[in-house]
Image 1 (cartoon, one colour):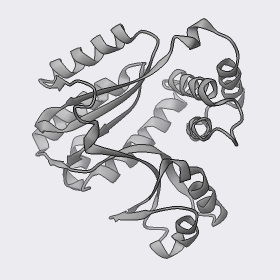
Image 2 (spheres, rainbow, N blue to C red; image 1 turned 120 degrees about the vertical axis):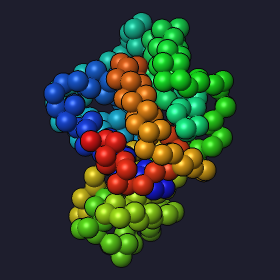
Image 3 (tube, rainbow, N blue to C red; image 1 turned 90 degrees about the vertical axis):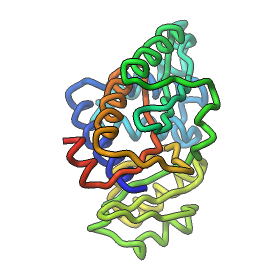
Image 4 (cartoon, rainbow, N blue to C red; image 1 turned 30 degrees about the vertical axis):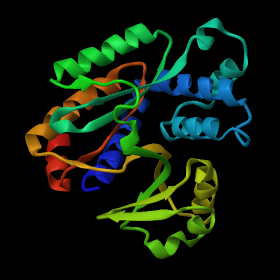
Length: 249
């Protein structure tokens, strides 16, 4: 999708900068704790935990913080038991479909925040299932297309990658969620530097938007991502890279 890979890359770099300022450690720790609670504290046997820990490492989260988050997830705690994974769905500026992944200990509060953010943007929060059907959940590893080519990815393909998307200087290696750990391991074994890796909801259809709509959309996404309960925001916009760069500044 035009602009989408670049948007993911920009978001990843921004998240690392923000995390190093201490702005996102709470979200990262919560995601680790919930993953440990749901699948156990063994990273090798819990793919979700492995991804959450790797994301924290990419953001330079201290090892002690990571270990405490895992211990919290595998221990007893009423506060952690109250945290639930929630998906919010809606349409943003230009009719772009949005999926918002959240971890919330108070769904009434989080839901009210989501409704307010969408309404302030002149958009609408939908019912469960209203836009989810427009996306497929996939594992995605992003690498530098200026340093590597598709020929370098044979190991990842043998490990389970089902598609390779090349967009300008960005290459996305795509697989089923359950194959992501193996695909990442294959890339690392081939000494390929990974810019970003994780689970994404990738759009089946795309909505073209102009620059004004893009600015309004990115403003809404920034508001959503600034919420303490929000982990990820996925969107199905289609926009030229040069326009996106102007919008993202």
